[in-house]
Every structure is written in structure tokens, then in C-alpha cells.
Image 1 (cartoon, rainbow, N blue to C red):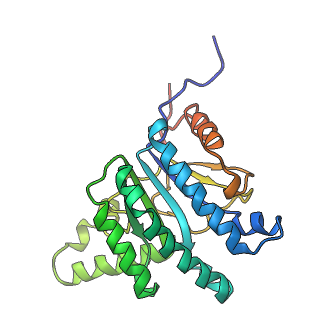
Image 2: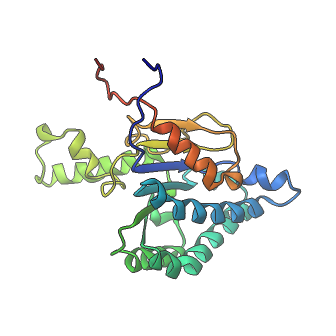
Length: 241
């Protein structure tokens, strides 16, 4: 009898911590923003590959609540890059059946960026081939804190019985209330930490830490990671016979 694990179906929801853009650029003698531009192009390629692998949902970590600590030049450049990418890719994303949504605290983003975010969400709202969620000014702890505030207001207003609050109740107030939990979380660049990303949602996700810097993370490597996921046994706390 073979000792190899029985292959399972692939992940339907893949979340990605896209790390290594800055180091990729610096290793080529370029400014960090050069790497972020390359990283955005890689997102487009990976999203296009999703349907071929049965991936319905892709969530990418674009800018964290901690990233404001970077230099003003890099932060400003990133915000312009996000706005330019959304505007330039909107029609292609629409035509390719990609639905785009954003999670995170939008109030701290500039008005121009928020406007184009709203526009592409509305434009692609009827698409269903791939659901691309972009975490922008997002932090897992911040998300849970904001969700708790919203839940507390509903309890105070008498709309929710505090004794009835459970995991399902709180999940309805998270930024990701419209998404299934991720099956697989990938982090590139060789770092083995989760960096405050989807803390609640990833309680039972599988993790894959790869050494490749994000701009070098090809669709072929993406396929290999997904294939590896198919051999994992996911018990969710249970014991198999």
C-alpha cells in the first residue's frame, strides 16, 4: 500500500502576502517603487491563472495598517500606483469576469483613491468568475476591533441579544463577511510570519511560505503550491480513521 497521502481537491480561496517587492528592486539597483510596479503586474498574471486551477477567490495583502511607517515617498508612490492600476485595469477586469472588492479602513485613504475603489467595485459587481479582494490599509487586529465596535453598537441599540453573540455573529461584522474563509495562505520572500493578515479568517487555513520574491512568483510556481495543497490532510481538529 502506498504511503503517499491521498490527493484532495484544490483550494477555492487563496490569500497571498505579497512580500519582497522592495528587496527585488534593490537587488537590481532600482528604487523600491520599481519593485511594487513589478508586483502589481504579477498580481494580474496570478489572478488570470486562478480559473485554470479552480480558485474562485483570491485575496491579496496590498498595504497594511503598519505600512504607513514607511517613507513618505514610498507611501505616496504606492497610493498613486494603486489608483493608476485600478483605473488602467478596470475594463480588462470587467471583461475577464473578475469582481473586485476591498477590505480595510478606507477612511484613512485619500478621497481620489476611495473614489476609484468605489467605481471599480460597482463596475465589476456582477462578475463571478474570480473574486479578487484587495486588503488596503488593512490589519487583522484593526479589523476585529472595528467589527467589535459595530457589533457593540447593535447590542446597545437592542438589535442583538448579547447572550446570543457567538463566532458566527462576529463574523458578520468583519470586512470579509462576503467571503469564505481562506483555504490556503501563501507568503513569498522567505519570511515565515503572518503579519497581522486575516487573523480570524485563517484559523484553519493551510500556510505555504516560499522563498521566491513576489515579482518572481510565476504562475508555474503558483500551480506547484496549489498542487502541494491537494496532498494535505485537513482534519479541522478531528481525527481520521
